[in-house]
Amino acid sequence: MEGTNPVNKKLAVALSGGAVLVLALTGCGSSDDNDKLDSWAKEVCDAVQPQAKKIAAANAAIQKETSDNSTPAEVQKTDAQAFQDMSDAYKAMGGAVQRAGAPDVDDGEKKQKDAVSELNGLSSSYASLRKQVEALDTKDQAKFADGLKGIATELNKLSKSGSNALKALEEGDVGQAMAKQDSCKSASATPSATTG
Image 1 (spheres, rainbow, N blue to C red):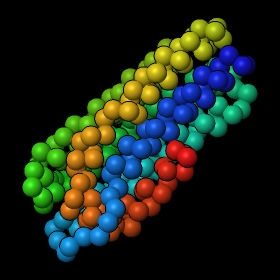
Image 2 (cartoon, rainbow, N blue to C red; image 1 turned 45 degrees about the vertical axis):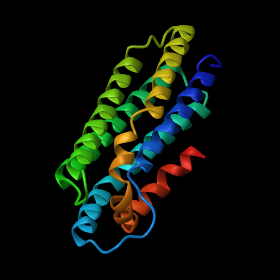
Image 3 (cartoon, rainbow, N blue to C red; image 1 turned 60 degrees about the vertical axis):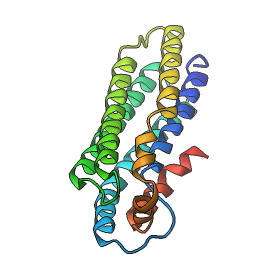
Image 4 (cartoon, rainbow, N blue to C red; image 1 turned 135 degrees about the vertical axis):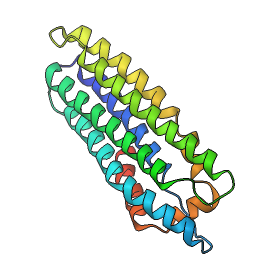
């Protein structure tokens, strides 16, 4: 099974970069009192927290499958499910930011729109990765390992791009309001464990 294992490790490393995107939705610092913004942050953080846990669990599943001597079919099944979970989680986050409306800050509407668009894009990208992993030939170890390499490369790109709008959304007052929310604090604590 050596052919699959190193590649799936790369997949796990690339995936842990994706957890960083979840952290972009969690701010830090203190905030002036802005009840409207605080209530917006609470709504978003409360909705994002379970999704952050789902993404962390999907990361963990792929990493666990990596450490076992798994067959290509097992790896394929686990990875496909993990990508689907991530796709669903990012879609749910996009929905949460959409439902919360624009934060009460300068350019709030643009920041919200960009973040929703980015989260939906991530959701589509993970759905596409799921299709790619499902299409791999599990009967041929070498072909399967090559296919996983391609998916790891895609994942790597995905983890490096795509969090700009989220960072912009949580700059300044928005980030400070989010930092005060317990659910955002715990959302950031969960995935960071997989990035170290």
